[in-house]
Structures are given as C-alpha cells and as structure tokens.
Length: 437
Image (tube, rainbow, N blue to C red):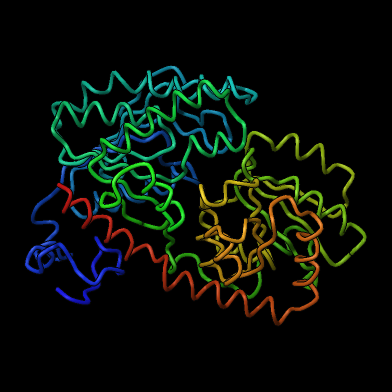
C-alpha cells in the first residue's frame, strides 16, 4: 500500500506491512467488540499527579472505559513527595478497584533522604515486592502485559509473567533509566554494568518497545531490533488545559499584573538541574519586574529552599490541584524547564505537554541536537545545560519583548494541538495493543 499513513510506520514509511482489512477491523468502532485483557506492571500509578503515574493512570482508565479488562500491579502513591500518601501503607499489599480498574498496591521502601545506595534499595524493593503478585497475574491470563520504565526492577516481573502466561510483553520507555543514572553518576559503576546487561536482555525479549520521542527511539534501536520500536509521545487533554489571558493566582499571591513571572512547576529532583534557576534568580534579583515561582515537591526541595532563602525574587509553592491547572499555568509568563547536562536525549519532561497546551513559552536547557532543544526552539528558547547567564538572559529577553513572548505561546498551543492531543494518542495506543495481542 503505497504512501499510506500508518500507525505502525509512524506516518513515515512508504510501505505499510499491516493489511488494509486488518487495520479496518481495528478501527475505533470495532474495539469494544473484542475486549482486551491487559495487565499493567508499573511502579507509578494514580493518584500521583505528575510523571509516569499520571500517564499510566490515564491510559489504564481509557482502556477500561472502552470496555477492556484492565488490571494494575503498582506501588502506593509516593511521587513526587517521596512519602507514601494516606491512606496507603509502605508495608502492606492493598487491593482496590478504581474507575473500573483492578489494582494491587505493593509495599515499597521510601528513603527519607536520597543517595545512590538508598535509591538502589528503593528500586530493588519494588522488584522484590512485586514478585508475589505473579500469583495474581497467572489466572488472569492477559493478552498483553504493559510495563513502563522506569524502573528496570519491575520489568523483570513483567518479563516473567509474560513467559508464564504467553502474553505479549509491551515495554514502554519513559526514561532510559540506566543511561540517565550513568550520566548523573547516581549509582556505582559495577551496579550500572549489571543493570545494563539486564536492560539489554529485557529490550531484546520484549515483543514491542515504545517510547515518547524520536531521539529516545534512536537510542532504543541501538539496544534492540529496529522493527520493535514505536513512538507514542506523552499526551495532554487540550480541552481541559487551555490558554488563559490572566490567572486568579496573581491576586491570591499578591503578584501584580505587570510583573513578569518565570514559573517552574513539577518535580524537584536531581535530574532537573534546578540550580540554574536559582543562579538566574540571583543574577536578576535587582530587577523588580521579574518574579520566580517554584511549585512542586521532590527530594531536593529542602535544599533548594535553603539555597533561595536570601533571594527576594523567589517564592515556593506546593503542588497545585489538577482542577485548577489551566489557571495555575497561566500564572507564568514563561515556564522554566531545566535539565541536567547529558539527559536531554534520554528523558522528555512530562511537564512539557501541559505547558504547550496552556499556550505558554518555555525556556529549556538542552544540547543542540536533543529533541527537547528542538521543541524549545519552536515554542520558546533553548540554552545549554548549566548556562546560568544564558538562562537569565533568556528570561530577561522575554520579559522585555512581550509580543515575542506572546507569539511563542501561540506556537506552543498549536504544537500541542497538532502533536499531543490525548484522544488521538490514547486511541493509537489502544489500537497498538489490540494489534499486538
């Protein structure tokens, strides 16, 4: 079939290997006639408000709403607070049914303060505590097992279940975990070498491997068979998160309408490289018209608070309610998306989808060839990781050029509409699961 736009070819191939009749049978109208049994084996899940947990929850719910039988093995909610949320426990298994999805929550070790060694124990505890749930998954006999990395520890459980049940093993990579840990020097080299061997074996054994960006897909092709790899970008509900001219948060926080707000919202962890934000705030602290707002939780939040105590132009907020997300995102004239050097092609910040849908420009830190830099150049400004002066200059420029700032926001919204709409992407993922099964 020449010149076809096909999901499996990701719209780039001149030839489509999937027969036309088969694709017609997989149309949206036909899906509920052949319900799928799909088992999620994931570390993070609802009600975590950001990151992998948010996307896993939305995908599982969408499948359940379409009439599929969905079950989830996961940890209790803990991210990005790094603390188990009530009424869940770090020490007990818990079964529940939420939005038609059957869920088993597994015990998990959460360190009070993160270090390389404690992070390893945290991830190992996930793998070990997930293993007993194999007995729950066996009689279910899923058609497809959907596993998300991070973390590699849960992939071993998913791989075992797939072998025992004959299910297809779909590995979806949100972060290339081992490579990112290596670049950030988060774990010892002997552990990394051991993890790399397991990671490669998992990639080779998976029925299909998908990820969220072109650059990450290229990395995955190097670890396995090119024909296995597909791309499903993180999505956003463009009808729920929409552009707003003003934000009620300004009045609540006492921020005047003519103050330029540089907003960071999300996880405050190691890979975010938030020291560049504090460095820029220090450079711009004598500019009364620029205010920095950092909203979120994470392992480095206390450290960041201490680092900003003498900066009058920086204020911190907790994570904000999802129901007010459009209003909150409208608080920022520009959104800050820093990343540590070397991980821009290995991770794609989940916060980008909401920022783009809200029609706000962003300032990202990424190397020139990283996909994050490409998005940043279209919908904002990209600077090199660790370039504090460049980061500050980008903020200063957008604050002084409101028309340019507005135009970049319009381009951001259009990018979200064209590439990230949740209805389309979740439908594509459902079709992919059905074809895989």
